[in-house]
Image (cartoon, rainbow, N blue to C red; front, side):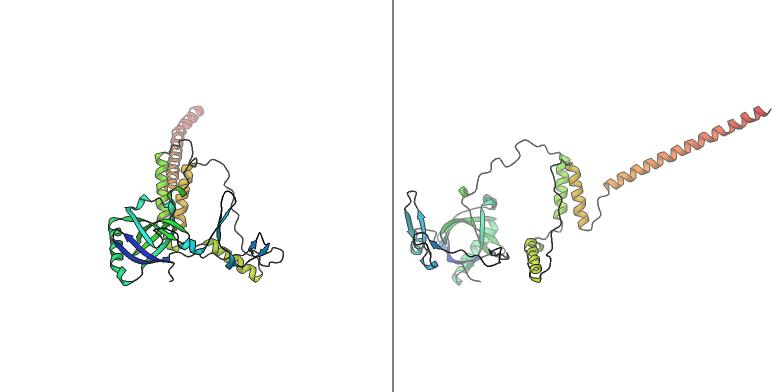
Length: 310
């Protein structure tokens, strides 16, 4: 694996020569821009506004336009020689509890490897100290053309550097949550917890995969073979109708269990059976009462008949 950055971790007087390796990789299917009419590739060309002609990439540099319209050009050397202390050093500023940094701030992760054998002992020492304390190290690092806030944390037996947004780069939360106070009933909360537990049973994160890319690949294969590509099933719109929250939660729990081959809860069935039993008992009692009444009435009729005959 090729390293993307070389430098050292510095905390106090301890210095650990390290290298960073990209920890993630994208697996998106590359799509290009093409002309709809004939399918030919559409490419972006670099034109110089002053000369009105295309120029090679080698003649392009970075620039900044000041408010008065003046353009300041910056060379690669200018950017490489910026007076930034964190340019080749992962400078540890503090050690804090893991929940101190809001996950909203996390950006890109890098595996941290040792640059030489001399770094093995201090590397292991920092790793064990972080693991034992349950803390992360807040650091700063300059990579490419910017300085980033970052944290050092332990994953398995490896240190991971996770770049972060600066606090002022995270937008404040405002007017997102419902304005009015919503009362949640204890039974609703209990059912929601039941649903959470049901959905989390036997959950394995490693089994998840990108279904969008899989579906896109199927469509591309179909187009290449000249056949009709598969289409998504139409999902009826949810609409804005009000639903019974408890009924929706109960049905969700039942569906989740059924999808795993478990039997649906027998609550309603039991109630129904109890109701049927009660109804059956009532019918039997009623029928017995009728028969008893009929038996009592029968002798009276015979007696009346005899009296009439005499």
